[in-house]
Amino acid sequence: MTQKTRSQRHQKQATPRRPLTMALPLAGAAMMVTPMVVDVSQQVSADEVGYSQAQQLINQIGPSASQIADQYDLYASVMIAQALLESGNGGSTLSSAPYYNLFGVKEYHGGPSVWLSTQEYLNGQWVTMSEPFRQYNSYYESLVDHANVLVSQGAMTGQPRYAGSFKRNAPSYYEATAALTGRYATDPTYGQKLNWLIQNYQLTQYDTGSSYVEATPVVEETATQSAQAAVQTTSGTTYTVVEGDSLWSIAQKYNVSLDDLIAKNNISGNLIVVGQQLTL
Image (tube, rainbow, N blue to C red; front, side, top):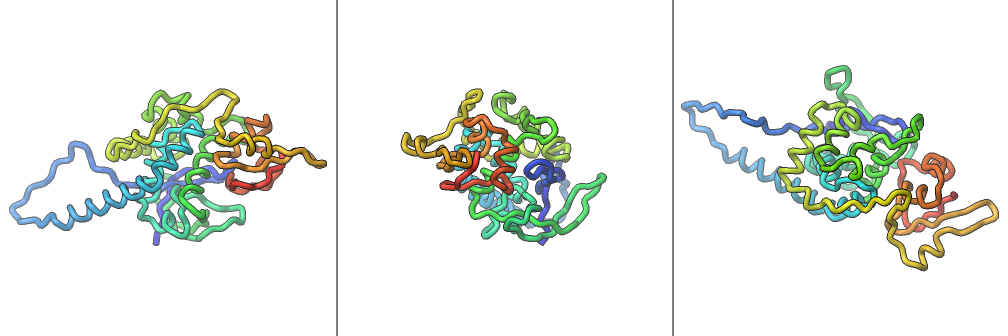
């Protein structure tokens, strides 16, 4: 089965990642009327199935996307729309169990993966090729990894590649999707597709107020967890990951470089789990 992915994606620092494409209804398109009788029941049924499938995925990931996006200063509506677009409304093989890869993330670092055929948009045309795609244990892991990619810093500039999509920089999701177009994806209509999905499925209901505070990431943890999180050892400082943590928030909290944190702990794909010990 062919897995369509987007035309430009970044893994960790510079690995390309690509999304699925999606056909959108043409605004103002007229229906050609002919003398013949046309049975539209099959088309209506197919449309209903597609809508139902998309809504099912939205119901599954919406609450988690809202929580994660708020923590990372992102628009949940944009994140969910990207998941719908790149997973074919949740119907692609890659986005289904046991892979749970909603965003077509590639795996080039030896982690759990599956090889699938993919269509890449190269030099103005679609080319079919086989690529290794990352495998997750849940949709939640896929969403967290995606958020980490959006806030990750470029190796050369030291600045977030997709800062234009952050809430503090984008007054609305329109500006966020525009900032991703031509940068996260080379498809010139990428933002239009995301906007259509956001409007059609009313995804702004999952957006919340920005929780971003300069140099003070929001990390939900109990007093006990906070006291036990950072521990001095003979070799340096270690940190125990708690629920709600991200590599970005930990790096900001302890004033360390995100790249250094990833390198010191040999982290692949920016994934961390609760209880994991990190060297600071």
